[in-house]
Amino acid sequence: MRLKTFSLFLWPFWLVFAPAATTKAVDAGNTSLPWHLTPLKYANTSTLLNVAYYEAGPPNGSAVILVHGFPYSIDAFASVVPLLTGKGYRVIVPYLRGYGETSFLYPDTPRSAEQAALGSDLIALMDAIHIDKAIFAGYDWGTVVVNVAAALWPERCNGHVAANSYLIQNRSTAWVPLDPDSEALRWYYYVFLTARGAAGLASNPKAWARSLWQKNSIGWNFSEEYLDLTATAFENTDYVDIVLNFYRNRLLYAPGDPKYSALALRLDVQPPISARSVTFDPQNSVVFPPTNGTATAKYFTGSRCHYVLPNVGENVPYQAPKMFANAIFAVDNLPLHGTDVISTRNSQREAAASICHHVLPFIN
Ligand SMILES: *[C@@H]1O[C@H](CO)[C@@H](O)[C@H](O)[C@H]1NC(C)=O
Ligand SMILES: *[C@@H]1O[C@H](CO)[C@@H](O)[C@H](O)[C@H]1NC(C)=O
Ligand SMILES: *[C@@H]1O[C@H](CO)[C@@H](O)[C@H](O)[C@H]1NC(C)=O
Ligand SMILES: *[C@@H]1O[C@H](CO)[C@@H](O)[C@H](O)[C@H]1NC(C)=O
Ligand SMILES: *[C@@H]1O[C@H](CO)[C@@H](O)[C@H](O)[C@H]1NC(C)=O
Ligand SMILES: *[C@@H]1O[C@H](CO)[C@@H](O)[C@H](O)[C@H]1NC(C)=O
Image 1 (cartoon, helix red, strand yellow):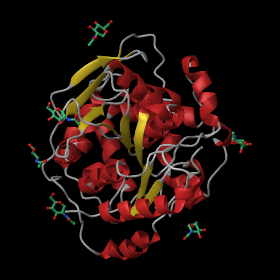
Image 2 (cartoon, protein in one colour):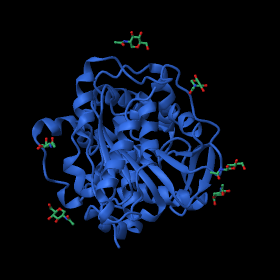
Image 3 (cartoon, helix red, strand yellow):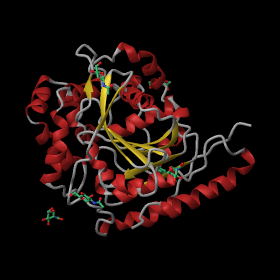
Image 4 (tube, helix red, strand yellow):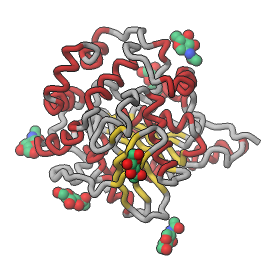
């Protein structure tokens, strides 16, 4: 019998922890001493990339793939990795196309950053390094990546962790405006449509990152040292093209790569994610303000827990590495899709609630 699935929301967390906004950062991790995840490994993929990635943990461990955002780098996960390897996970942290040492194999491959291409890259990397199934975890652009990969290739996904829950776009709604205040927060989307924005980003990607970090995460006191470290990932020759294409494609000012047109159509229907999922909204995120998760519930047909993470901005793995790791431990304890039947729905729900309550969000 097919599983009747459910979505789960844990209001007590939201209610209990929302007032904690007045308390100090709860989970600073090792963030005062940023460092690079090195050495890197490299793999050629069917998406015509040479993907640079960091790998740690036992080769036979259960695989977790961590996906960074914009304008960030794999080093955002530096303090998350040891928490995962410490529990026996095999951890893979790839640079997205356009970032760090990931490169295009051929000069004539379109520098597309459309959602279908980014999601395909993750699966192509798994194929290249012979990983059948993994837990996918991402934030910002990384959420787009893990959403797409989990939605289109559910058989490859052993669990799904995503900041801001669900960011797969239906292109038909690309020109539906938001209220003016929400549009104003997305100023850079629109600047990147222009030649002036392209020239600006190309001339000083680090300054753009500093500005976005300051504006998009309330109260984040990042160090220049961490910014310097991250900015090395922007030296990639395709960085500007990829960043511009991501926003231009989402706003329908740049076409996709025809290679992905069939997948792009499948994404327009905003396919559901059946993998067990933990989603969260950072409380101090500006562009995507915290929600209670109900608006995105329709996208999750498997077990799901949703949280608001207090005192955390957009760069969750860097600002709150323990919370990020705990979300992965939690998702790995949720029931697997298809393993339970309707009659166990209530006990399954209770079990999931218990798991989420015990694992998230603060374990020091
Ligand atoms: C803390 O940061 C340093 C780099 O400054 C790194 O070598 C070390 O492994 C980190 N420690 C932990 C526990 O993550
Ligand atoms: C990737 O492909 C390039 C170009 O074909 C080749 O030179 C390189 O050796 C390949 N790298 C790996 C790791 O297979
Ligand atoms: C991985 O291999 C090690 C060493 O052979 C073994 O001790 C461990 O149990 C294995 N772990 C898994 C998950 O198979
Ligand atoms: C921000 O961090 C710097 C050093 O990293 C520290 O000197 C300063 O006191 C911090 N400011 C706040 C408001 O926490
Ligand atoms: C995509 O958005 C358009 C415009 O709102 C809507 O008419 C259409 O039904 C959506 N497509 C799907 C598959 O939901
Ligand atoms: C969740 O948020 C939405 C939008 O703010 C609101 O309408 C709804 O009542 C909330 N649901 C719960 C259970 O708090």
